[in-house]
Length: 516
Image (cartoon, rainbow, N blue to C red; front, top):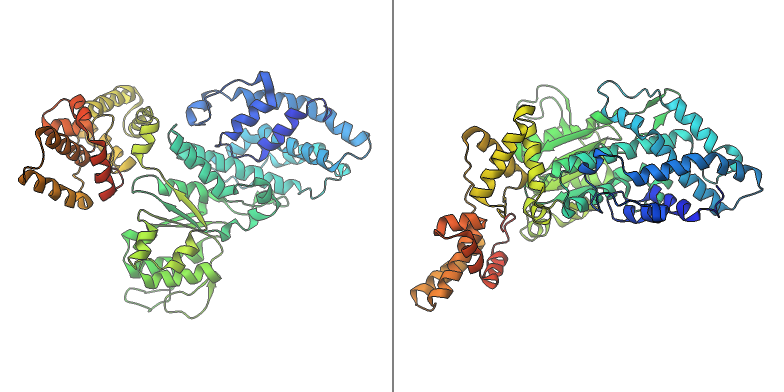
């Protein structure tokens, strides 16, 4: 293959090598690479259902390149000095081809339960790399084979954890996957590979979003996907990625325990400290990650101590004066609004600005289902699959979905997000019913009082009163079905009586996550 004969395929494939696979650009580049041979495959939102069959476009691109790369290699070696641009294109296309050639074997390293640090496929990879990217090509800045191998292993791990941990086919979930991919590799994969991969632990990731929206899943995907060097002498990765992620729920611990868990302590430093103990910051390997769940719960004093860790990487055990170093990456989450926490004096601004170098927001379940109602089916099935036998999976899923539709309505807002859906499913499997917890409408209470005052002063006619009250009940209940049950009306009547302007006022007064 000469560059001139099929340059569109070559240039598009080179861009595919570095693109975010969860953004629409992937589809655009596949279409550009194949032209009229492109086959639509699942649309722009890439989700697990699409993996039931291989992406035919990737298969076609790979077949063309596998056939042509040896001849292209010979052409570059035999016809004088190729341009720097042509050499870079060739290298990028080789990367694309080699990754796809070995991705199934790389996935085995991710999934295999036994010790996967010793990698038998390294020898095959090394031989293929030496043939396709020989020293004679004089590729400027060409990284060694072991570094490329480590990148490929990181790519395969990241795709696995991002793709299979974040469930759903909606646009909000697709956008979340793309955000997580950027947290791992940044928006510029070329710059990442030129050296940023070794410094990504210096960036703290803060995950915000309502409770029950999968913030720990996001953190785990990031933590399990860090770059880990490969040692060709030992034929092993220098760390085991499976033990590199440490999660700590700060809301479940007292202030003293949080500090001890993080920093460790010396014997006798407080009651119950009967021996020296390392904290998680000290235990975390250099290429590992510590996830601080609900960081908005910690005290201002502890924020100061964590701020020092973020600024200098240094900390001390409780009761000790020796400085120790935290070498890993810090990931944090909160279901609170950081700006509101700073205004209220519960979060130090300097602390916030140290933990927000990388921000991710998880979407509420109601937004996900509004974009893709079919996600309710797949999420319910996912929950039930871990609870019942295979022969009961289909009937149990149908039973739960029928109850949700008839009793809550498909428009139910799920204020507790996925965690509420999970408990709803469990309630239905055990008792055949589920009663949502009442959500206090603190911010809307003043408007409720205003409505009562207008009724007492006889300022509303019958139609206005019905529309206002129906809207309020709908806002409080979270669904048309719930409002219809309370009002004794048909759900279609409830929907027709909603006052959009009054509903917007209620939402503004009480923007509680999960309201309809």
